[in-house]
Length: 107
Image 1 (cartoon, rainbow, N blue to C red):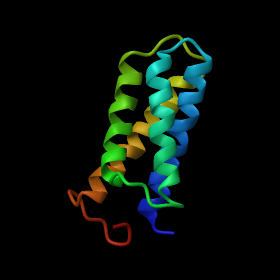
Image 2 (cartoon, rainbow, N blue to C red):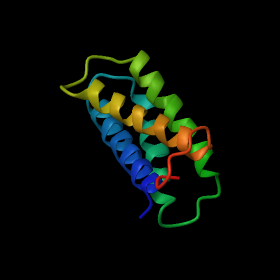
Image 3 (cartoon, one colour):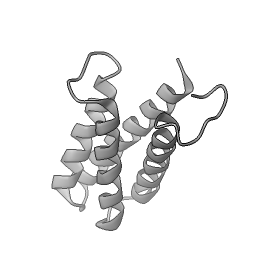
Image 4 (tube, rainbow, N blue to C red):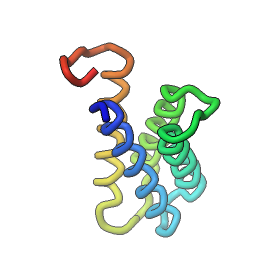
């Protein structure tokens, strides 16, 4: 499995976990549900063809993660940490996938 796919899968899985934590806690539940849907579609795109481009889904997921950081409620422990790590992996994926940075062996 290529490194970009591993980075994307980890970012999407963490986004889904963060969305579940925020739905159960006191966050913004609408954004959390949208985050779960976006992360789930990214994970689903590994197994079937999703009619939306993967870059579009990743950008939507990144925007939702930024909004979750800005509009964070009082969630349980590690709520901000999971969001920050998922956002960091999402940004790394976008930078590498769009060709803004070339690292031999990764992209």
